[in-house]
Length: 331
Length: 167
Image 1: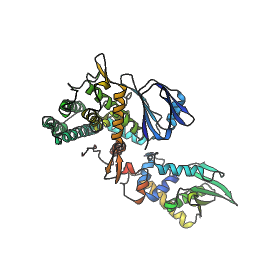
Image 2: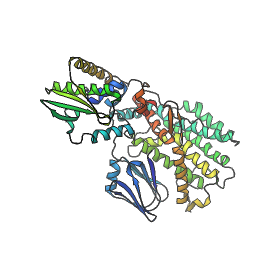
Image 3: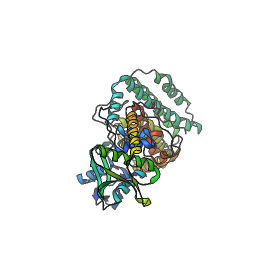
Image 4: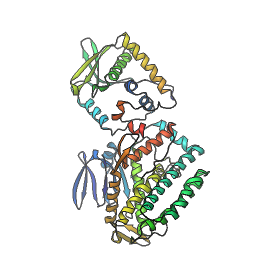
């Protein structure tokens, strides 16, 4: 199983013979290149072209985050799974308004279904979430199927998310944090900081998996494509955000593993400190390594693999083989 | 699809096992390169018979190994195991057939280095007929609009396409 390497400390990332070498104040560490799928860089890291070439040869994706935990960009090595056929199909589905809407709707459908699944889980644990579940279920039902364009889809998703984020206060009753609506640039409170951080990690996770498929990350369906930014990963991440990122958040805050001391204030922004980021990343990685039985593959797969499988499903939809149905968690 | 469809060795091998694989390959939808069995096969292919001539590209053919054997050329095809022996045999027969079309007479040898086994393949009338028939079937699959639906066969368990097929 290939792993993700997270670099928090500042230092130097370089190629040493045929391994990856990380030099920092904490010391020098080596990581076999074949054991790495991607590297997420938070610290101030020096690197050179030789390292990038090495990353390209070994198909390792690099994701960079800024000082405030903001996503800076990725080193997406030259494509190695090239299929002109698939890219043309992907573009064809983007250009045809009907097909595009259909796919975009599936992503929202999947996102809302998974949100409802998370809420039902906590309802079964005695939280009074009916006032949130009902309106979201209503949006996920008729309202979604009647949508005539992408803007309406986005609006419905936004409404549903507004209810959803409000419900965090009920789910996390007794926790020291309260969320007053979603705020992104900048996050106004610790919960918003956690949501933002988690979502950006999920975006990079999906992007890395897209690299391992024949899909082009620049052509998305729900999020506007402008051929400058990766968008397909944003689409697919919608499905996984509730079941990966938000569940990790509930665990960390609910079990009081993370506290006020793991955040810092910077002007109007609340940011995660390194200690908080480490906690989050650890919990997320544990989650992604969790396996469950896949009925069609007839074997156990991890959540990490699940992301790839979702992309394969999308590929099959584009080929015209099998209609895409988003993954909906059952538990 | 492009008008110029050329059958290549790997299509022949795939056709014997799973026509769906042929269709996917023809669209450059390549398998998951991280698959351990693929890596293992590649490793064996590149390390075995290190002293002999390796990987000869001749037009659309990619021959693992070529050497002189008496008067004729001997074309070797290296395989990880004999599990898909019949498929490997047809792949080699296809190479011999194509070489003959180019005016080169050759003999074939299947090589299973891990099993320390070799097997001679000679292109006879029966084999020629099989190759021609196989080529026709391959073209027919490639011309299909959609891939043949996946079918659960014993090879699925170690196939690098399995996740794509059964996702």
